[in-house]
View (cartoon, rainbow, N blue to C red):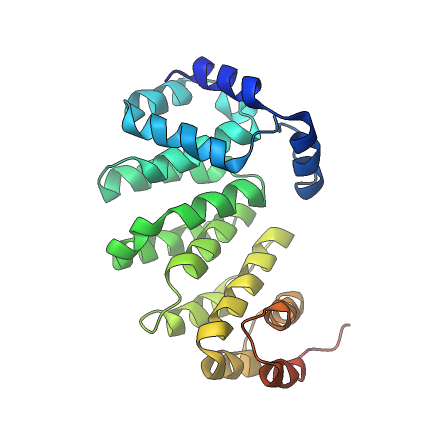
Length: 236
């Protein structure tokens, strides 16, 4: 599929009411057409089965930095995940995709799709750390959300704590992703994560949000929630 075909299809299936709904969820994002995620996944899968590299080449040639809609960015990230390719080719595509991310919706939906990261965990763990080290708000969020989706396990739990401790999170969406990551760790590793939160070096906002998100989880017991609330830091 060519870019103009994709754009025409998106405009045809867009829903004004859903556009308004998404605009409320994504403050500051102005390029929303109003297409539901399942439809975007269908389009991305079709692109992935066709000549996906021709599609990506066309996108590179376009004035995409300022001209892509929310939905087109989503399709780009999803197609990069659905298409069959080796890790080096995929990481090169993601190097182009991640700087385009400017909202949590595109970031999180695509990150959750990248289940193949579990097949080559060392390669992708190192890749995510490189994205986090860029220091950009959504580079950090991309790394953290992929970690919470695909790397919260016995092999990586200590490494996750180290990444959280050593990452200077700039921007609200980076901080919230770090808090979300810690809360997911708490569900599976409550003892270890409680110990981490007793001595972590995260900023106060991220530390307290980690506790808040853990307390909001239905998968954490009342007893643990009572204990973890005692670790909140006083607001300055």
